[in-house]
Image (cartoon, rainbow, N blue to C red):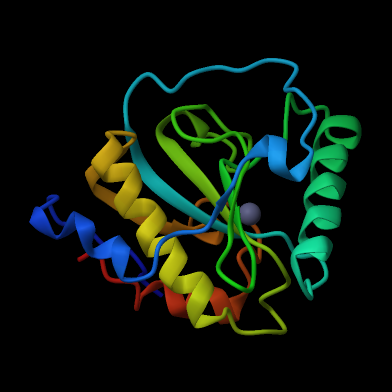
Length: 183
Ligand SMILES: [Zn+2]
């Protein structure tokens, strides 16, 4: 299934986010440990790669923090990454959590980390559908990325499975990616 979409050039509607402002939780706020190393993207991200964490579905902010710390530990200790692999993560309630953040090379899609931003929905989307709050947040987040110059205005949105042999981001989330507009 094709889920490629091309972003529109930024226009004056960038204040649209004020409709419902994006809830962003910084690394400090969720208790991230320091990255071992941090490498900057050479240019703005051409790809937005969508993942799921394939872990439990969280019921509330406290549970999100537990899952975030769990993932960071898993990525750094078990997989030997420098930090949590994703640039951002999104909870069921639409809260966005800073992972590596903007402009930093992630560890989420082998062979494609140097020109992409990796965003993970928290939960397992083989079993559950993404919430409309989370879907709305990802659009706002990417729009912010374009405005800030970290994401290319004509970025391509992909599911992890488009780039590798994986079920990620789960078929119920993957199905929704084609409905994400860039306006
Ligand atoms: Zn993935």
